[in-house]
Image (cartoon, rainbow, N blue to C red; front, side, top):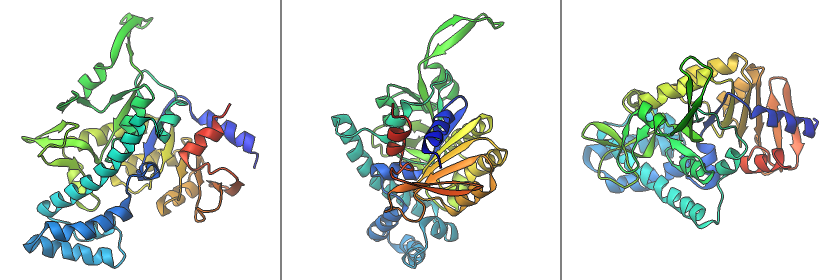
Length: 348
């Protein structure tokens, strides 16, 4: 494989109409605990937090986790009650918040630059914002965007106690207007920004008096994050999850091309739209340490999807470039890692 041609092709992918979809792999690369760490955390802490009927419910889930089942499967097969799910949400948030704070402290002190910040420097900034869809709860994408000098549109309005208002959130980034040849005579201009869509919720979303709010402080209100398992499909149709899911799917449908990072292709809130667009032939680049089985199947079936991955041998330096025509190994840099990808592909 011609590495120079590959890099030119990869550079050419970062053009108009790019929609970026980010899964837990990118956060894991920065030190946010993944599903295995969450499983261990729940197994350790849950018996200290529940008793009575809740403990009995948890033990049924615990037995499955200890037998080797992943969290998604265990919670799907034994759906927790709303009361038990609240405890799972609290423990999940606590684990993620601790790691998130550690990373953000390093960013603010100048000892770390997030991979996402490095990547954003090479992405086009459309007037409508860069669409970023993520299943992650943490706020590293928001931090990474601000460190790149960009505004953050989350569909909420307000910095301290924000309310869900998609239109007003967008208009808050308007910075002026210019004359236009279009019928209305003027065109609004906007600050360069990210449009961050989080169909699984965020650590700063809470439910207050039946309404969703966005607040950076640790409130004594129910957090709005969707844990793995069957309940996430029910909860995903409540506010504000539905607003973020619907907007995410609209962005997927109208996107011209996709950048997919650390994502397992296993989320039913997005897959109907995403799979359809990938199969339609829209150019797509997947960066992943390992491809999930669903991801590998999609790459093999879609003629415009290219994946760069470490595949099974993560310790071996280099990367596999995989598409529906086959796979080639490139010895050397780990191009599947976003940090290395930016250094190698966009190096002057």
